[in-house]
Length: 140
Image (cartoon, rainbow, N blue to C red; front, side, top):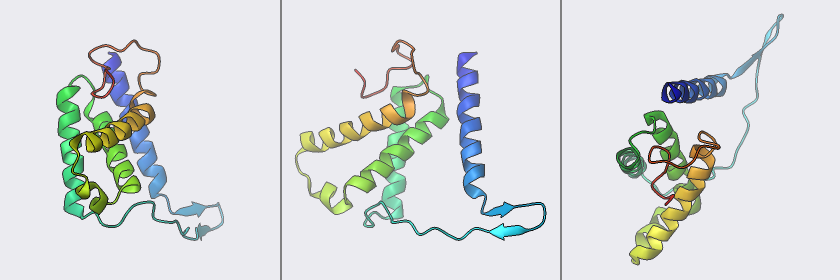
């Protein structure tokens, strides 16, 4: 029952977010006023190809879902969005590709994973004890 409620809550929140992000006009009873587009600075390094981003996301999702099978798939998707965004926002592909020390690369990824668990997973399981169904890959 809790899993169904959690899944429904995550999906409703995600749908609400998607709907609110798609609204581009402000309406009043008399007229429709187009919003001026806001210029935002791109927070990401631009050297990641679309294939690389999709590959990182796919590996993240597959790994996360296989190690945490009791967690609903939409939560894995949001977690992996966070992971990919933090990686491309913090490190260029060129920099990550140049790291030859596996321990250093694992340390970087573990740090990013911890941040995403804090942002995405912990709010969903706020005060529950960490069990096999809620213990995430980097929370040991």
